[in-house]
Image (cartoon, rainbow, N blue to C red; front, side):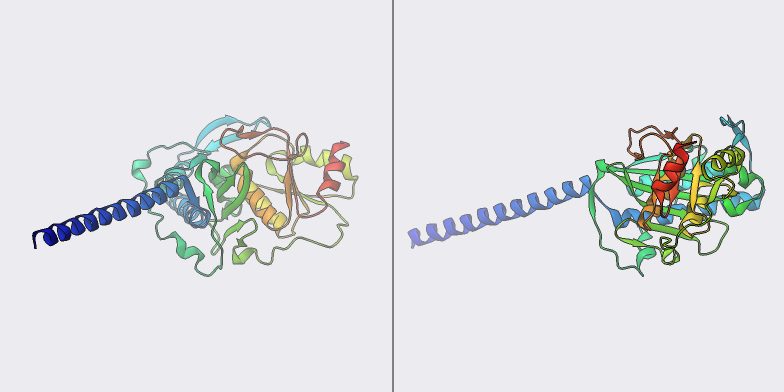
Amino acid sequence: MYLGANLRIRKLGLCAIAGILILVYFYSLRTASINLGEETISMKALLAGAIRAAEMGGLEIISVHNDMRLNIESKGRTKEGVNDPVTAADYKSHCAMYHALTAAFPKITVISEEESKECDKVNISDLKDSMKYLEDYNIEDTLVNVDDVTVWIDPLDATKEFTENLLQYVTTMVCIAVKKEPIIGVIHKPFESKSTYWAWVGHGLSSNLKNYISQTEEVKIPVLIVSRSHAGLVQNASKLAFGENVQIISAAGAGYKALEIAAGNATAYVHMTAIKKWDICACAAIISALGGTMTSLSGPGRISFGTSDPIVLNSGLLATMRDHNWYLDKFSNV
């Protein structure tokens, strides 16, 4: 009896030890998966957050416009001698976009045109419900190492035109680059209804981009869309490149111009002076997703959007939906 009791006690002890070991094993697996999750990020969740952030920035811009308290300041003058303004809308949009993204995705690097100024006065929304923006899209998710991700945001593109009430040019933009390549772009037009455009290269497009297909017909007359601030410079160079058989459209905002290219309303977006990468990253991703190309106008063709890359592109810009090398060759002879 005594011996049997000891055997039963030992069996119970062994079972208890085995149970503890099993619990420790599964806990270690759970911990490992958590640690893995901290080092990777869902691209689908980041896309949804980017869409929401761009629209949040747009709401701040609308609010400042409606209050008529722009608080216009100046960052100085561009190389073309044009005033480079910044407004309360720029700062408030930055606060809403930047802090919402960094709160939801604390490990990512976010590069913004603006700085945080009086952000305590701006309501920073939670991005946890952002996935609803993708409910109608069948998009397969991808996990990416968080160290490979750089997010570029432009809280208010076309600030000068915003101060002039040329609101059709105004956009907010978010771009997600992976290993220096722009793969997700969001362009939001706050003063137009249902006008958030997004694309994820190789995965999907917003419904309002579905009809923006690469142009296949032969270009008979080049139609170049260029910045309002240096239209004369591009016009002179374009006539040297194409002769008199060229049409120039003057517009503002990189986001606006990129969407005009995507829609086929112009055949090439040309920029001949320095431009900041938060202006063009989302544009590059959307044009690429639609089958087009964006490169520098001169120098190395590829534009790198990594965390440690220069924020300024000094070699000009060319974006097209087709015949890209033909345009490059034309401008190389100017």
